[in-house]
Image (cartoon, rainbow, N blue to C red; front, side):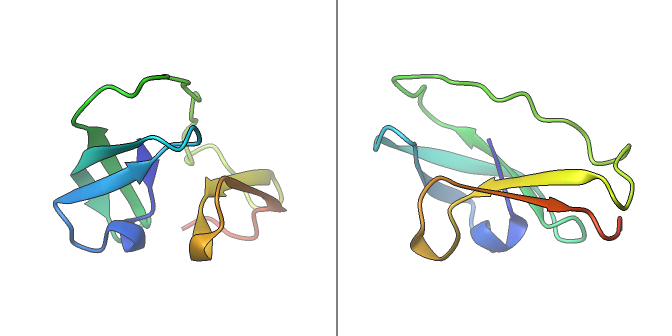
Length: 88
């Protein structure tokens, strides 16, 4: 699983809430503050396992469409579309 690095903010373990409402424990494997990304490994297998194939940010250029998936500010299961303005 992936999330933003600022979401896990130095934690070693986090609780992951799935779209089904099930919660599972996850261990933070790696973080990149520069990219604001974190990889979380589930410590138990979820009841349902829907996998979304994620791509790499490396071929993205300014002006291309991008999608962000998450749960900001207590909202659940959000998806935001936009146009990339810069790549860092």
